[in-house]
Length: 473
Ligand SMILES: Nc1ncnc2c1ncn2[C@@H]1O[C@H](COP(=O)(O)OP(=O)(O)OP(=O)(O)O)[C@@H](O)[C@H]1O
Ligand SMILES: [Mg+2]
Image 1 (cartoon, protein in one colour):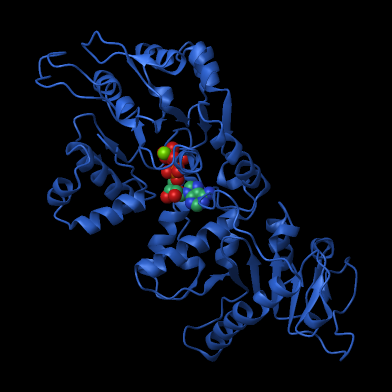
Image 2 (image 1 turned 135 degrees about the horizontal axis):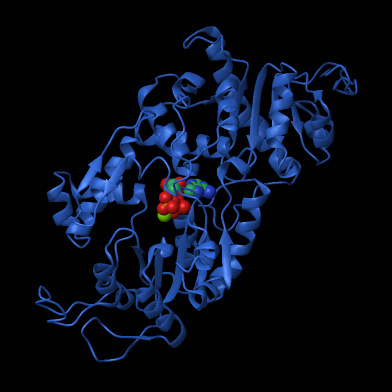
């Protein structure tokens, strides 16, 4: 062990052979004797107090360091630890190579590092998890990744929220924090799974269109209404209707919505028949609805009706080291999509990810990692590949960084301006795919034709961007 000048001093030598171990694990669990030879252990407290492992490979059981991973990595870096750190999580194990800026691709150093990761993943990690009897159990809502306490709390709450079959849920969070992931998760874990999950973005359509989208219309309801059409509330049937950016609904629609939620009845535009709805309503907002209500821009009765069950998603910058976990998860996903190798990330990349403010939250991580995987050949994600230095988008805007540069107007026209900090091609592609889907009412064949791509490619994009075509409509 090396220690910081003020830290405790101790060497993690094997009690039997007296030599330093090949690897060390930061864990609260006692190691069985069969494991002591390859692995020494230090406790999370010791690790945070500055005791630096002497071994070149360090496994970190993240379950034992809730909310402290960022501090631990900063400690290791300050103490100039050189070696491989693997953060063990239930989702993905994240290899971080600290102080690796001198590494050259293809060098013997590169081979050494690759072998170290392979050895750790194949031998050490399974041995630690199996022989200490501490396997990771995939948590409920695995799509909402993260090991920070705030996200763990939300994951623990979600099964209860999902089970509350009729409960309206308000999902709050900045752009890109995972509101849609949560909405989809609530549906998938509820008794309504298998029934339609219908999503509508209340900012995407002008008021009158949104009204007929939601409630449907009768023939002759207005000049162009040559046929009757059912709305999304009917399409949702016994499933779930997800109202995204509900803060943008006008007063009139808010009132009609409150009636559906409370009395379960509604009328199509231009219709007289009272119809009933059995759908579950989920709503999301990146706006502070309480202030909107206080300013008179959002109805109080609807606000209180929605606010019974609330899920508040934290910003990524408040989520301890979740950016590392998400970055590695996306790196592996894109590496497999684009057929590229990925080993892990360098120490500098890790520090950049930990220090960045993430105005675009998880979506920003995904976009940055996709770009890094596509444009850089190194299998170690490094600081150069991340290129995070671009100026921050306008933080005041709820959809900072995307809507300011990319504007989709109600007619479906898309206007793109390239801001100095750049724009993700993904965001543009997403908007084009979404507009085309809307133009064809989510008809896959027609949309694929419009975009000159195969239906499979379109399905891949739909999955990638998380679009949910209304079913049964
Ligand atoms: N905790 C998470 N784990 C894994 N992926 C996530 C997580 N949170 C968000 N994502 C991913 O990040 C992207 C953005 O998430 P999502 O669309 O749910 O955000 P949002 O809050 O609805 O954003 P917006 O307000 O801009 O609509 C998606 O690709 C989603 O899959
Ligand atoms: Mg969303």
